[in-house]
Length: 307
Image (cartoon, rainbow, N blue to C red):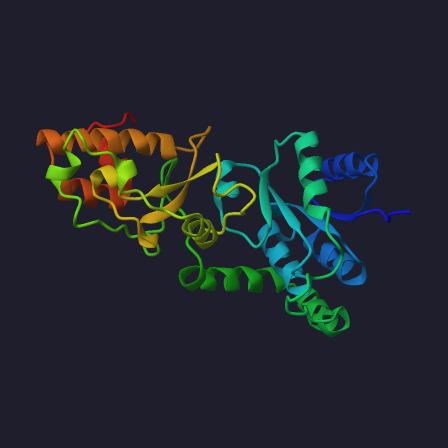
């Protein structure tokens, strides 16, 4: 008989904790529950867990900090964070997936089924995680001192500038990390060429799948949905404005959604900026600088998009 998959559910909301436990139990999962990050760590150290489902906010810390600690114990275990808003979903976290709390039970269970359908233990060829017996004393000492989550949060903040790209925002508009994705132009794409009626961006567009994956990874997006319908691998400076097929000009931009202004809106700005360049309303350089600095502000300032 196939052993039950074991899910560790972490939430400081007792009602939600009970609902998720029942939802998984009736579908054949074994469920351990924890109402705090501290309790979750103790369960995780002492038991074999196949998947972790964690709320974004916990009574004694944050979900991302808790996941960060659990990953240090057993990085191969898949972990899901449940966020309240699209901004949570767009955040880069140590979790393997970040989903909205409002996701339907059927969709959540399906994601859990897919992510937990793997052999226990790290995959062959991956570095061995420290043995539980080796790491337990250090973790318990941190928990006893009530400093675990603070230390993890500080460590995560220190890594941001050097390891990953992080989205910036102008209100609800999502912007690129200007340090990682500053934008790049192709000097061969002059105004004369771009404004030629015979010119088509498809003739110069050359972004490989590997480049798309690289862009997704740089922004910490899970390959399950990036690239895809939820995220477009966008040329920060669009080809129609002279942008280059260069990693420094590529980023995974989210689709427009409630509370999120994304790539559909940016496409409108780019198309109208292209027409403005060709009509002499603005220069090509002004369009490139505006798009790469803050595409939303640039669109508003030139009347290409309504607030």
